[in-house]
Length: 114
Length: 112
Image (cartoon, rainbow over all chains, first blue to last red):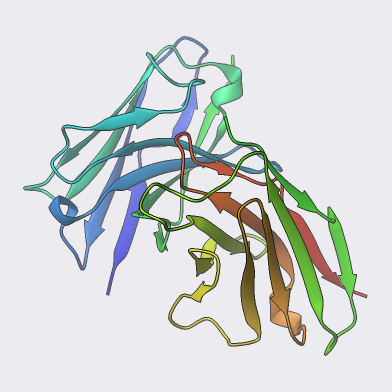
């Protein structure tokens, strides 16, 4: 059974950093594109970043480009999102998803506030 | 970026009656490989999104056959043949033909 479990969310001040993790089980990260999708409280969905099977191709939405880094450890089967220079508008539930969105984790809440 | 426009914003439906959600993209979603990467997601209250339909009309495994997707180019539709109580939630279309992948604003389905 495919499972995605995110962790690492929490309260951080504007300008701060946070690293999210997504532990995958039931499949190998090295065989799939992986993504981070976020949802601000009470708002819609935004596909924030994606990374290919080998980890050598990455794409970011403009609003996070230069501040967020998506990466993966295929040996440990863990997907990461390193977030820096965080802004209030980055407050959201961050979901880890596989491929075209067939599988989602439960999400982890990131709150950026002073 | 490709803009995805959904209508209506809110859809009150009587149990057992059909429902239809429209999604329009600002440009054609046909990819260079000939496929159209238009997906539909359901988000029940308090839950993670769940994909229902991929590539316009293909139902994901476990999705009831009362859900169907259709369309081409820039115009797409999600239909629920007979709405059940468990269908309450927000429905999103999403295009994965171009980067960044973009979602529609969502349609809230509720029971009258």
